[in-house]
Image (cartoon, rainbow, N blue to C red):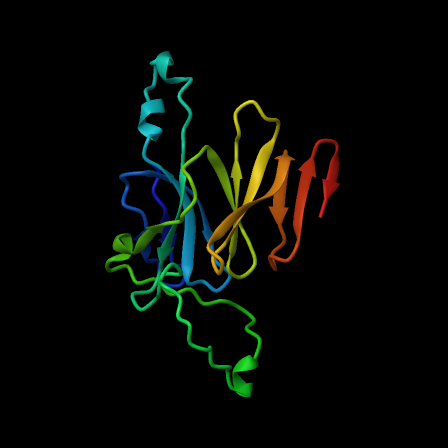
Length: 186
């Protein structure tokens, strides 16, 4: 099985985020650096036999998961409050040039949460703007891949694009470049 490992370039510290019980792939940071999204499969081992061709037709299904990186971080799935949000003071509106990611290694595997989307043949994960993540599904007997978008504020998934051969997100997460059929779109 593949595991997700974070590496701190400044200190050389390695933190294994996933536990190795599931095959985890495609880690993606959220826009604020609070969470790490990834795809994981618990039925991958059924296809991993080296010379056993009877396993070739079994599809690998994966679920969408997220790790809350800080011990003090909160799950985006906690019940929503009906209280009014406070507005930040005017000095707090300064734009951040970079995101600082803080990972507390102690107990990180207990802070892994499943995202409420059905387990399917997901093949790729792509970063999205704040509170969004994109994931690609290989749908049997359909051309290309179906791109889904998950909204963490509304806690809903939606089909974003269908029949996509390739896709890429801009570094600022504001543009989505994709190829569908014989054309490209943004």
